[in-house]
Image (cartoon, rainbow, N blue to C red):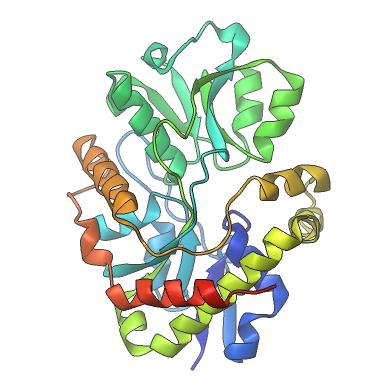
Amino acid sequence: MTVRVGYFPHNNSLFVLRHRGILEKALPDVEWVDLRALPEAERVNPKTGLPSLHSDWLFTEGGYDVIGTGFTPPLTALAKGHDVVYIGISGPRVENGRLVALASSGIETAADLGGKRVGIAHGSWQTTLLLFALEIAGLSWADVEPVDTGVNDGAEALLRGDLDAWVGAYPGLEALEKSHELRTLVDTESLFSHPSLWFTRRDFAENNREALEAVISALQESDAWIEANPREAAQYFVDDALARGDRADLDRWERALRGRPFGLNRVSEAFLDEQQRAGELLAANGLLSRPVDVRAAVVPWIGEAVEVSRSGASV
């Protein structure tokens, strides 16, 4: 059978695995689906909803069977009634990004964001970070003007004055740090653990256990290689960007990879508590159509397979 794996640079683990040829040793019939080549999802007003492209393609002909994303997409999937299950999570990525403003803006804390334009890659972990930050500041989603900048365009929009604040992520945030003085409004560590995570359809997990275990083992092996060879891994991202006519800096990518945790862990109770809290906040602020039960997406044997694979990971 063909196993379809969705990948893109923002999930570093799957992107490197795509280039390493490790999974093909266990599953000769692997189809790699570049998320950037799929039709774009219908634009969603960030004031009133969440995009659901990542989760929808798990249930679409020509999509994929396994995907890795940030914190928010599984919540979107569950709210739409998709029967997804978690595969695993990374360690905390609390150094990956933060909510910032230009030091010259006069914005001192998240409490100053009422009525302000805040840039996010809407539907990603950045949506959750902003929502958590607003809750602590005593604000709601309705109190700010969220702007969907995508992953790469927030820094330029902030400098143009099109944004008042931005949830930035590395390596893109590094260039802005070097050229302008920034004020951190909220870091990530004080809000949530912000892991990478991987998920699949329940029917795929139930009917293709050996294939899913092979994906898990290949990810563990590839992640161990990234940790041991961060500069070589960074080169994959630079080559991809240059091939697309974009700019990329090898040193910045290497630093970004060195600052991120690699290796899959089983889904933890602490993570599920964070997911549940985020789902409740998203629903209360009108971004999800209904509340979700994240523990319904846990399959015990998958967690056990993740733990077994960790002991066997090697470079």
